[in-house]
Image (cartoon, rainbow, N blue to C red):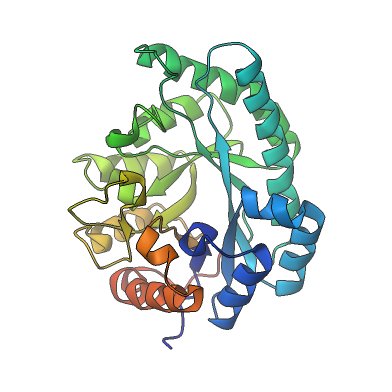
Length: 293
């Protein structure tokens, strides 16, 4: 197996059907130095046990996935979402503290789409802003960065009313960079003709919390949520994208997050092997070996 680049991180979504223990074992066995976990698996294992496993593994913690769903109208559902995000912030702080040096206390935020029956996208975006303002003090008190993730416009109605980095950065601008940043995900942003100017802005403002890489290839899956591909298997220009992120001075982990039924049905060790191979060809040549910070 190819020796993994030291900044490669596996997001557990790539090996979705693993437990926390299994994910850690597969990633460690492959020689990868960093991992990001999903809340469902962490809660299944228990937070305390997950923290212990991360500490014992010697792995860095790259991100915690995910918080958000901020667009509900005022009422019980919105309050429940805010309460759940406070729990997610606590989880992020505990897991990152257990990780090796260079771990990131970053909670990836998928903000949510339009509430059922609504056409008020402007109002939905304002409720995102209000939710971030409500949660920012708790995040700051726990040393956690809320990493707003703009998603491809095809997800605007049901998953994320933020579709561009500028939209996320404009919300983040009201808060200190260490409290609210952004997730730069190639799958969601590659289409934007101005994306590299926006990446540069994110870098100038010190707000890149996470750089995530996976590829785009058509035709899309019947469930467009599950349309991601190994780096290098599609049409994204990872050389240009990675150089743009590197130029900002970003020296964090680079996560591969692959939502794909075909990949999920692959043996996790094989999926990780193929991830390493694609990453080494498509992304690693344009990354520095600077120690993660």
